Image (cartoon, rainbow, N blue to C red; front, side):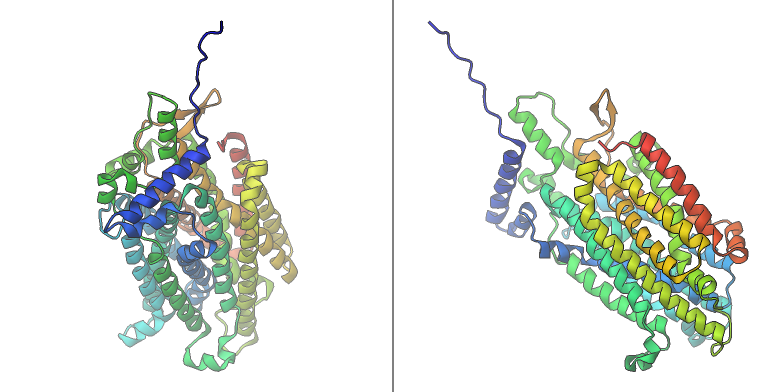
Length: 522
């Protein structure tokens, strides 16, 4: 006679559990009076909805493009030497280093009815719009208020950059965080790739606008210069993108999430908790709501006591962007001066000045190609990462840019400039998407370290938005490092093509080796 059979309870798959959690919250949010507007957070988004959610990135990338293309020529055209011009970039970067983490930390704890991210994005968007009005009109504003010297015009333009640049840097991280929080787990990688794609298109559009000779067109008579026309288009596009993103999906306010568990977004950590309960596991991960909300003191402690995986990720980002930002901020002036043999300080009707203007427009076209290449590369990153791993994709992007920088450093031909821009786009797509995915991966497992092949659960609360902001602050540090020293400006003056070459090669060589040896991507 056979004994009683042991019945093993069937545990649903992770996909089934996730679908059940989302369906329950969707129906619950849809049926509650006053909370029905939150149900869209718990459903899969269409591609058009992801594009609408990401439109602010288009405006921000357009802003970065116009700044990269025109700020250096504007300041140099006022008579500012390269030494002071690079110091100006350092000033805005220093503000960004201090400003971005504080904004992100406050955003994590904001208890506004409109949510945690959108009120901050609105304030930053208004700041960017004000800065964009000032950058191309610094000299005119100075003359209007009786300050006619070159120093005052450059100072007002610098103030515009110091308002716009840190605000854009903080906004891009918060926009990504906002998108990750209002999307389901399955949509998170889709929204990041969408942001990368249309952000690249936005930057390409910005550089293409810079490549147009607006004074030769009928509409050009309404603007005082090409720079004024491009910055006006930038202002309009940024406003449209800001309104589109802020009205795309509602955020669930922090007090509402604290009161009602079924109105909290389903994160990977919440899914892990649910699976552990179904499997009868006594141990449960700390509630993700409390793990993601940290005070400023805890934020500072997190920066000081950063996990090894985060330290390596920040180090690679810093070294990579030291070379990349040097390339971006000086590229138009480099092409106009070295490849086209132009002179920004020559008389307006002289051949040298005309060649310089042609060089700036050609460089803008090259940078548009650079961001178009980044957009196309972003379509392949998700599949490539799943196939060969994040480390291989990251290193490949860096090596592609090394080849481009070596080429343009020694061969000052127009075709080589376009090749360099195309290869730089591959690097841009990897450097600005994979680190965000890695941070999301770390937070989803609540683990930043691996011991004996197993993830070690973190006991230190860390906010996802705060960690993303730390990564964005690294961009500012990377911009400060080469620009804060007068030596960099002196070298730019004497040997204009070599700083970008040397810094890029050295930093990428170290970054590739360091990341390949120590970076954690599991």
